[in-house]
Length: 196
Ligand code: HEC
Image (cartoon, rainbow, N blue to C red; front, side, top):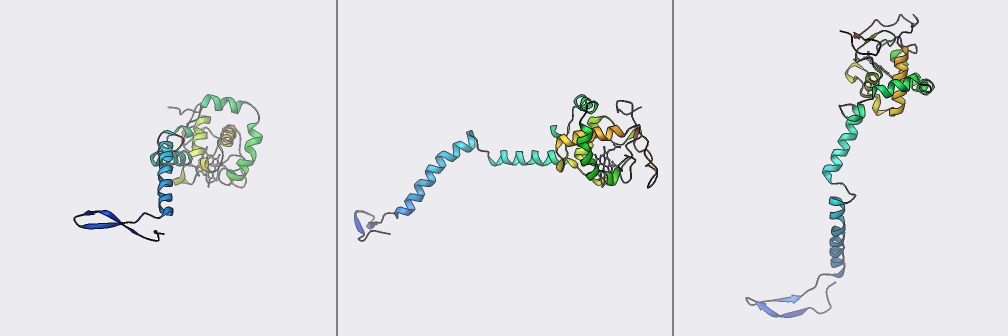
């Protein structure tokens, strides 16, 4: 949309003259809008609510590793708090459905073990404290077939499941459909810590 009549400007550079040929209004409009946007957007990203690419990357990596294990706070459990939870009531009913749906296939409804270890004995592969149990439920042992449930089950339910697993210890599993699994791992004391 140039003007109807282009005007030859009166100055000359090395004998070259130019037309006064202004940029179209729509083009200038977009140009000014992008500048206005940048003036707002750059401070917002760097000092305001917005996240830079690096911050977004760090947040995504943290979220991913919280789900799949690692050593982040998300997989560290407070053993005292969890022991108190397990001593209380409520976890049993809450854990029931999740255990039946997700765990019995490998650990059996009576905890006797099948593909997964026996929960009723005093031997543990990954530690016998409630916090150890909650941790291994969360991060799993994928190379051995134990799923990292932290990605699939919410943290509160995992705490209840840890109480459920712990509660099998000292019970006597049945012999059907087959005898319970032989002890695996190291023997632990009453608290769940490995014995020397
Ligand atoms: C597909 C089979 C499978 C399913 C389903 C499964 N597990 Fe496991 N689980 C295993 C195997 C195999 C191991 C042993 C890992 C190893 O050898 O280190 C294991 C280990 C464990 C341990 C560690 C035991 C120890 O001796 O330290 C706990 C606790 C546990 N599972 C809890 C659960 C819970 C709770 C669920 C349900 C949310 C569940 N598992 C579902 C296969 C399974």
